[in-house]
Image 1 (tube, rainbow, N blue to C red):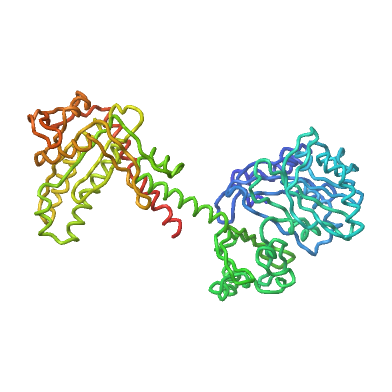
Image 2 (image 1 turned 180 degrees about the vertical axis):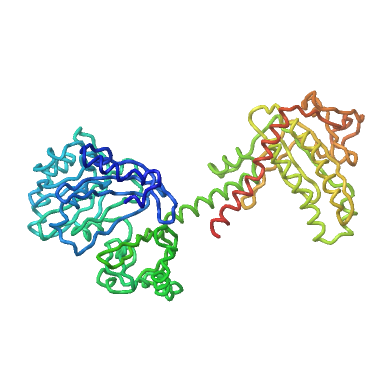
Length: 583
């Protein structure tokens, strides 16, 4: 057995056995322990080991669960032609190492056998269990009528629970109850009924793992939650469980003796026999011992995605292959729906401010609010009409997309609200909020300064139709804002401050940022402004206007900008998520 152990343990293992045989002191036997095991290729993996000793047969039995993929469905199929009486002690030891509770009762509902796991789950000892009525593990309302259920079955032969899986409530010794899955089977030869109980307290939604046990294998396997197939070296089906007939649509009789390729799409079915032949010659494992997502085919010809796990079992000199199949149609649909929902939300957040988008999702009725402290920026390309009259439509769009994409990047960094673009005009505001924004005006001013950096970067690329320049205007004050439209949402703004910002841009100078007096007052001392003079502003009359020249960059500001840059691509990532999932 030390061939499956790491070298530092293997070289000492025989001595451990000698010590136990001499002293009888058990360290591992009767316990479960997590340790490291070694494969043929030398790689190691974590596992849980449960050991028990069969006193009469002089054998030691160990169950090993591979923990590499938690909750992975593994089952060992016992040789079906071995004699039950000879293996009785070994089977009991195996059952004691099971991770599920096991009860065997007679036709009078009297408990004849339990495993160690049953004691751990319910709290009674084996001695307290044996000879008692099985209703001791049931809530009173069920326990009082359970004997009647048994009598009705023995009288009519009509099965309600036997051969099925059902979620029920069980009761512990201390009176507390817990949810569990119950699988029942009947052994006709002995007149006994076997029940496996899987505690769902911590894993109610998980697929349960049921170990197949000797002459009870078929009934126990029928209680499995996944489809199970056992095939021989020629690919012929020798055993299926009840779930397989439910999932695929064929009966057990229609399955047995047929090639396993019957459940495969045609492109795989045609080549499956050659896959088996190649493996028998080379022993190179591609699927065995692994889990992989594949397509399976039902009797009606429809296909569905599933997870396939295959293991190889040596049985009396012959080789069998055991496959578990789990339908993942619902799981994949849920993942796709989640990805689509996240992409939809991301697109909505990319169009509207986050708090407005959240309001719109909760209540799609009209959204219109008054905000007393919003900063508005307009930017316009100088000489755009004359320039574009000599450009092709394609070149115009390419130029605007390049420049405005650079601006969009800055909008995300400074957490501002891009309202819209109209031709070569670019409109941005601080995020409208019911609460007073302390730095909204300052962020818009910094954004404006960085816009000219972005324009210079664009000009440095040697644009085909020459360099460009912008006029930028900024104003701040009260606005009315709301969502316009039902097809393509637009969070637009109106009001005197919006008009003033537009006038600041229109009356501004090329390559300059012209602002109103209110912007100078709210922006803060870290900015440098230069008085341009008094201009006659349309609709307002004489107004003092200023030119924003520069801004200081405190160290704290740098770190905050870096943080925002690191998250600026979240919309693109979310929008691509669904495409990656579909691929």
